[in-house]
Image 1 (cartoon, rainbow, N blue to C red):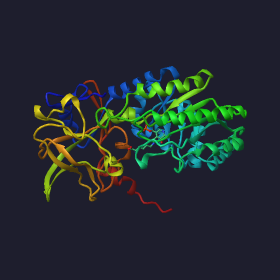
Image 2: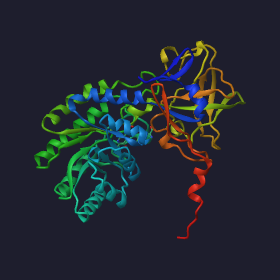
Image 3: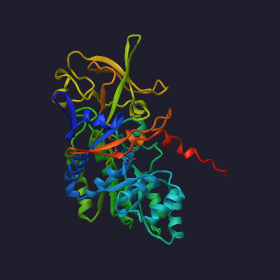
Image 4: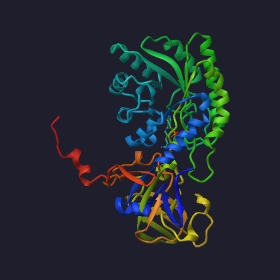
Length: 435
Ligand code: LLP
């Protein structure tokens, strides 16, 4: 469910006609719906309410400070993976006690920054990292909490590049090693190892891998408690799916139906539960708007060349991912029936095309072999489900300034990140300094 919909052939976001918006902001542009962000967040919170979880929004999915702020106002904590994301969370006014800090390569400087900020938990990925953070905390005469990231060896059945919970990934430690980890570090006075962190992959389109992972984690927690270790928090990570195609993802309630009963006894014994959603909140809260520059045929192929591409949305190139693409204004016969977004949309008069960008790489495409209504030069297209891992993964490749981000709230539109300029591109290079 989101708030992007066609009315009489025109795409609207909440109360804003997106073609009217483009007259002012131009293309390419990311456009977000506040109501969608909030609805997704609220539905998730509601589905898991019995566990009263701390919901740490995963900043890496869509990190604009203004978006973080509106989720923080809803009560969200944040999941950060770098000093930069930590800084974003602070700028958004997130209480740092509600933040978790994951990532395999935290630097000493980032660790000191997080200790100073009194971060809620460090999510620990290796023995070497634990020793380093504990030593830094000792030198700073500080105390911090740590969650051990455990790799439960379950297959989340997702893309190889986003699978994290199997044994042979760089993330976390396996269950056997986790027991030895607690024996070695479980009584550290400065870095209190009192939580377990899981994150099995992303996107995970069924509750089953979570059930498997959580069962293994709870069993491990029971054994560790028997050995006298206090474990008061279980962070089950992120990874819930998003509807890139209509109906692709179970609703939050379906995940919760299987996960909540498993975790209820843990909760009733005083345990805290953390969730780290990113995509499920952000993906369908954003679209990337772009304009057709040229139409070109090559052999039997038709190319729709647009003013955006892999430099603004790299997911199709990197993960072969599907993003529904459709003109923002269409003849009534081409309005997607019941708002359906799907690769195989069944309407008369569609043409098969590749939607490609201006970058000098043959990997620069947003869709291949896609059925689209006939489009012409100058027409605006919406690339749907681009709110998560869109703008945050954008680059300056081929020296394109990054697009603006616009937040829609009812009838109001606000530029929450201005369009970059050529000056922005070269500014850090203008003052060479001898080292
Ligand atoms: N927690 C941890 C420890 C993570 O590594 C991630 C995502 C999340 C939470 C949030 O997962 P989500 O709820 O968004 O699925 N760039 C890829 C996705 C990479 C995900 C990395 N970790 C994509 O565009 O599909």
